[in-house]
Image (cartoon, rainbow, N blue to C red):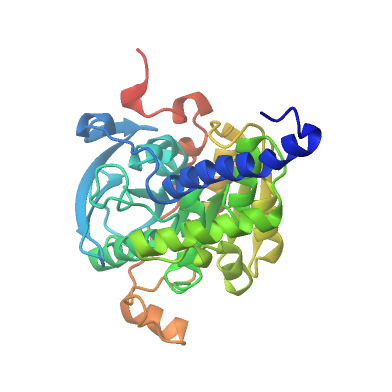
Length: 362
């Protein structure tokens, strides 16, 4: 068919073929943003409700909350079995895209032996929570607000930190920027800086070729309009980096050097723009690699510094009602914090702390 036209005819079909391929890829991008493969599980996958770690007995309390859009979100709070006489700090673990609160099991040995409780949730649209779609942080940040409201109302939590991975890391930053009276420290593992730039990298990676920026931009606008119509939110607002300069909560960042999904420069750009006390540590591996124990140790020490050892009084005022006088608000409604963990817990061999007791082999 194209012999007569020679090279010119062959060239004439390249752009339509590339446009067709890009259209398919951007359909995948729509699914990636709003309906990635959903992790499903049964309650038994969460492990036993009671277990021992570092010589102490702990309990998992499952909670169902209703978010601002009316969806039920399923959660778990891991805390000492014996009710403490004082409130304890808590880290809320925020899972990545196409994941669930099962992720949080891996961080229990990092936090529980250090005297910090762990709260995990399935974001709406993820795991077994209600909702048909996810939004890479746009709606997920409101789930975080609902969880913090619940923890503050319980009277059992003193200071609160956020630990997020991928989508959860972006969510942590977006929520912390607006709730700096209640969120006292954040850990962001592999956050994306801007969905617009991530989508271009996503397309180039899948096509294994450089795509003209004008074409990526045109198709991105199509994706934007499609998601606005179907899911009622604007993906152009998914720019976690725009919150960085005005967020002053102490922050710890990381990314994997061989991450081909969310390239490491995203975390580096956010780190550079971040307005508060900050630190970044790159790790080996890719986007979904297990993080080394040295990283978990760094995270544990970071949260101990800012949640356990800090003498500043935590706030327990409802979201959006915190006053400008932090000390006065703190005096009005805070509980004293639990003492730091005993040395023997900190000196446990890593291999014992790295795995929950119910997952160990005899």
